Amino acid sequence: MTNLPDPEEHWALFLDVDGTLIHIAEHPDSVQPSPRLGEILNAAADAFDGALALVSGRPIAEIDRLTERVAPAASGLHGLELRTPAGGYEAPDHDTPGMHTARERLQALTDEHAGLYLEDKQATLALHFRQADDTARRAAEDAIDAIKNDAGGALSVLAGKSVLELKPARGNKGRALQRLMSDPPFAGRCPVYVGDDVTDEAAFVAVNSLGGVSIRVGEPAVSAARYRLNTVDEVLAWLEQIATTLNPETPPT
View: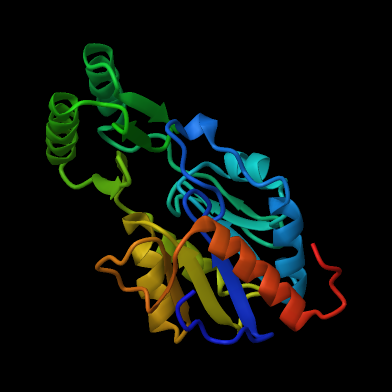
């Protein structure tokens, strides 16, 4: 851990999922959360009186499945889907111009190139190339660029770890964080965001603008984040430490 600030009771905690709370796997369906993840998140949420939200590129239904639905507040699909602490729900737009054509083009590409995998999240399309060769990767990059250009600004591209994701241009994790910060129990607190990828940069910028704490997970990279944790395991240990520090009655885990 790299000189993180001491936790304070008035923090509001926002956590990315893949690569932050759960180790990244070769295939998005193959991830294996720690069996204690729900317990750790519950303890951290208690430390901040429920001011904890999960923010992911996955749909909220997937966030809930992987984390035992410990967080009443969540944002999925890179800010396009939102569940507020009071139970309100904002659905993603599935009819963004260019998305239907993009789906057909990318599915044809995955049929042509072994090692490419299209994760269809309905509102977004994630083209994974972790298991692809260089030729397939270049084909994926060229196809995504062409689709984005053809969409005339309606779509944007997020370049993650061995994945390129097409999404409506209007949403990002930073906007979702700012939206949640306007409601209890987040309102009036200091936002803290932990993420591991370029897809989290908009949230880092938003947190910094609010005077909060931005933490990047993983190897040093050009990032707006002001602090760093090295691994998923360090994140989980840090969350446990927070729960113990702020709520001494929390039993050891």
